[in-house]
Image 1 (tube, rainbow, N blue to C red):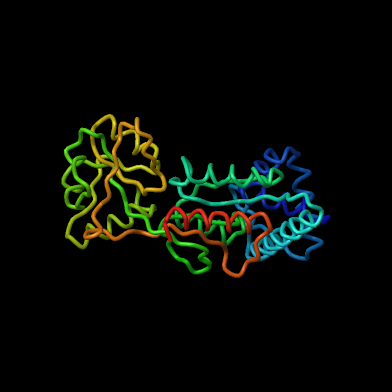
Image 2: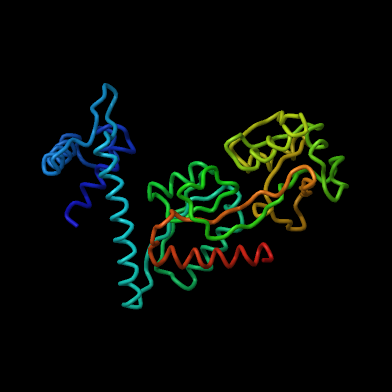
Amino acid sequence: MRHLQNFRLIEAVVRAGSMRRAAEDMNITASALTRRINAFEQEFGAELFERLPGGVRLNPAGELLLHHYRLMLSDLLRVQGQVADLAGERRGHVSIACSQAMLPYFLPAQIATYRASHPGVTFNVNVRDRAQAEQELASYSSDLALVFEPVYLVDFEVIHVVPQTVQVIMRADHPLANKSEVRLRECLDVPHVAPTTKYGVRHLMDFAARRGVRRVDPVLETESFELIRHYVLHENVIGFQIPIGLRDTGDDPLVYRPISEKDMPAGNLILGQMRGRTLPVASARFAMQLSQALKDYGGV
C-alpha cells in the first residue's frame, strides 16, 4: 500500500506529460515530485520515463509498471468491495466509458436507480468515442463500456448487445417528416448534418453510402450529437442519432424517423468489459442492472 501514492504521482506525470505540470496538478513542488519519482526509480531498479526537451513520456519499463499498477488497483478495489459487502456497507466505485447517446436519458436513470439501493457507490462517466472506449477498458481507466459499433473487439468481452436503427432527426415541417421511414438516398439528397467518422453512426452511413456509389457530404460535421439536435432547428436540415439517445416528450419540436434497413442495417449498441477481468463488486452489479435494462429496452 505504501507505493500507491507513488503510482498516483507517476500517473499524474503521464497525464500531464511533464514533471512541472504534474506537480501543479498534484499540488506539490516540482522538486519534491522529481525526488519522489527518482527515489522510486532507484528502488525499482529502472528508469520509467524518457526525458524529452518538452517534457517526459513513459519508456517500455514504465508502461509495463503502469499496467501492473492498474491491474493491481483493479484487484484491490474488487476486494474492498467484497469486504464492504461483508460489513453490509455496499460501497464502491463504478467507472464507465460511454457514447454520447447514453447521456440524456438512459444512463442518468440507470445510475439513479442503482444509487437508490446502493447510496455508498460513486460513479465516474467518461464520454468517449468507440475506439477510445475500448482503450479505456484496456488501460483499466474504465470498468465498463457502453458504445455503439465498437471498432476492434480484441480485448472486449461482450456482456449484452442491443440493435439500434439509425434515426433521422428533423423538424416536423421538413419534407421527409411525413414518411414512416426514410431511404438513405433521400437523406443524402437533402442538406444534412452528421457526426465525424470516428462515431458508429457515421461509420454505418459511410459504409451504406459507398455501396450505393454515394457519399455522406454534410453541411456541418461535428463530434457533438447535442449540436446536431439543435442545429436542425435553425436551418431545417436533417441529422442522425440512435434511438436510445432520443425521447419523444410530446412537446418536442423534432420528429424522428428510422432509416430503412433495406439501405442500412441496424448497428449494435454493446455493453462490455475488459476480456478476462474480474470486475469490482459494484461494477459487476451495475453491469447486471444495465444488461437487464438493455434487455427490457430491446424487448429481448
